[in-house]
Length: 307
Image: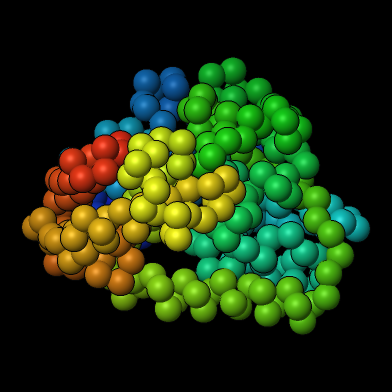
């Protein structure tokens, strides 16, 4: 078992921010994954499980432990069911599903990251969520080194959450997806529509990790304040006030701290415009949360992982 040493975390995340990691390993199969976790435990090294790094802010101080990336990338199709490795990119999965005329994931067009990461955070957009197509998830319990199989209900999916994220001890290895038959042309059109929307509305010209904050459940907004927001409420998958709207209304578009800036294009994105540090982003997040609470009495909750 060989670990890489001292590589830059800037290369392991789409924010292009972070120090160096002590150890890194890309696990190509379940045995490799188990062996890596086992060895790290023997060496008393903390383990961090990484997908594509599209939803994480690494520390400038780096990580003194093992960053382990599950890279199981097989896709197997049996009728309307598809077995998918956790390391498969969502974009590659969509291409496969389209080729097989399987529908149900079109909302994820343009979504970055791996399927494993999408399952862990129950990623969603345009009214769809990852949980909607999950039949079964196979994971590795890092404490017992046992393989666990869970049906959809046992995954405890919630808004941008799951048992895998909440417990922090299970690594998604495989997933069985259940889809429906569709028309290849219509599937392609829906996927491309989502991709085009993201390319037009999101600041893809600068390093970023997508939406920084979760959207706000309307139940968490004072009714008097909410009364003036009826026109912007959307379903995600329940009624929410878009956080981008709140940030824009607070006049925070374009506000910067060091090399980090609230995107003028999409205000729920913080972009790395001038070789930002992790502290630059953290301070900007703190500023945004403070201003939103001051103006709307709403406590924003981060969607990204801050390490």
